[in-house]
Image (cartoon, each protein chain N blue to C red):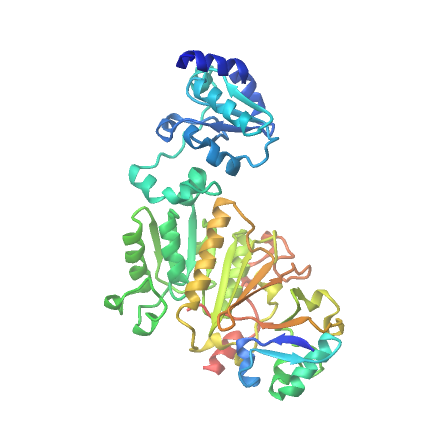
Length: 391
Length: 91
């Protein structure tokens, strides 16, 4: 039987090795660079663009990170030994072009090449987000993106309640809330972020308490106000994604026009009775709200103007679908619901997907953002009057 | 007969029906069949000139009829028409 060091020598003689100088050039050529060290060793930095797959999880996770076995792979560790063993394993798994970097990241650094120092997670964060780390589609990088992300929720009511809770739980670093209302007993049939003993409290304050209790990592930015033409640009600027759960058409059109101008994607949902609609409006990448609904319906067909019944669970279902789309947009995974409208009908338990096209004559998104003026934003004829008439 | 999905805001005009069967070989003919069955839907779907109201979206299966041939779009036996006005509820 060979000794451990003999075994390593044998393996090293069988696998292909590559010098750091060569890796620094390969990095730009579609090569997957994999760091096989343990998580605790990453604090001092990784090679730029490297993905982390600890050697102990190599067999179970590599396919999630490099699904195509013909993709060229460079593996590295601290000194070049574990990566050689890992390269041997990947060859046995059928990967066709695998190399191990000699000298590991120690030699890489000694030669003066750059490293990227990752955000360090506290032991508590490692535990809290462990189920995200286990998903190749999210992982450490995705969780970093979530922690760095800024998401604005319009409304801390039916749709905002579940969205705020799940985005806080997911570790979205900054969550803004816009709502001018206070908690009412009749809200509690569906707005699960609020509680009976907080009736009368501003919804933004009540929501903040629940979100902080769930995840103290999250910074909550409260806007105890109603979104209107005078404050919208100031409030929404700087957010990465906006979640639209507002309860009236004027604000939805206003929001659309402002977000097209600022090129911020909107995850939009609406609910009524047992029915929900969901779509993602990504300015200039897909259609906008006005492409889908060029004009609002008259008041008698727009019951959002007044009080209406809604199944308590429904905003939960739709709000969580919104939260899912937000996370996909931030992490950059999956196929976001851009150019598609999802209808959910709870009584029949049906989901229907419809195509939404960009309107080449859209009054807003067919033009350049800098050409849309303050005066045009949110404009459509006499809608406030319609709503007032409907009571 | 095509299947027509009725949105919540129109159900008070269709005796609460969420789905109707309606005959006709074009989108316009099917919708007219809906308005014959339920006359209260007429003014909600069509303007005075007989055109579809701009605030009502109609989809043949998953495609907006505006990008097909509008009311002249042919409809087959097993097609589904979705009538969809905008909704704004969120609270």
